[in-house]
Length: 98
Image (cartoon, rainbow, N blue to C red):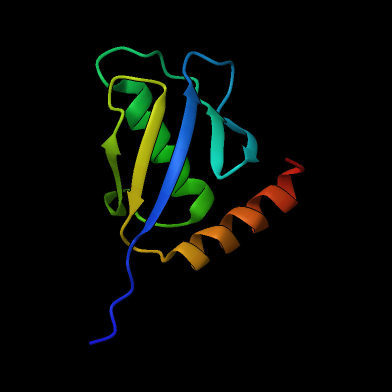
């Protein structure tokens, strides 16, 4: 059985922004702004939806493993390997000029 480990992503989130967007990807940390406020898990939900959209993967494969109540989060992406995640991020950032 040759199962690959799921990808892990470190995210710094800024809730309450005017739009959802990636600010930067530096030193292995994806900096993201989301329009949802940081109340009742709304920013976390919006972050998962946004990552699902930009990575073109199902929301159900994205799991926040640490940082549910803070701005610094660790995310496991069950449907991608680390190499696949890196490739998808590079494609997205290349298209959107980050």
